[in-house]
Image (cartoon, rainbow, N blue to C red):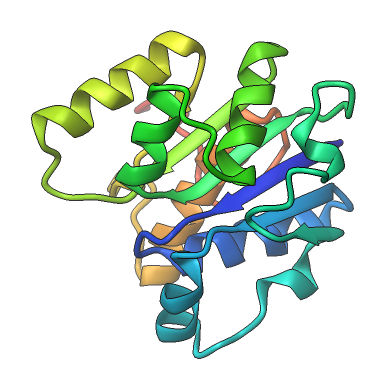
Length: 184
């Protein structure tokens, strides 16, 4: 499997880190793009820890010569985690102003999976409309929300629930959370 991973300037760098760790464990080829705005967030939330070491390959946010900027470079899709509302708005409106949004547009036009993990609260009407436009274009929207049926005990359990949902949407087996089996 080959995936593009986008990290934007929204809070939630730990989500991107955890996803990359899980994909690396599973030997998934990852192509990482970190937006310019994400740099400050990564420094603040991860203490400057480099996500690039967890990826197979990484690209600058303006590297339009990158292989992932073309539909002829075959991938299984893209995950944008966390997805800022700026990036959601750009995807919704086809404004490919950087490699991250260009790669998402490429995946959508090639009918490949694009998973957005939007990080904003509360959501404005504009945010909601942009998310609806992204959904209509083919994106899968997985907000990093809490779930209580798996009975989380730590923040790590809550993070694993979100990452498990992303992996589920990519058809990647995981046991990061207890999947619902009904009540007996």
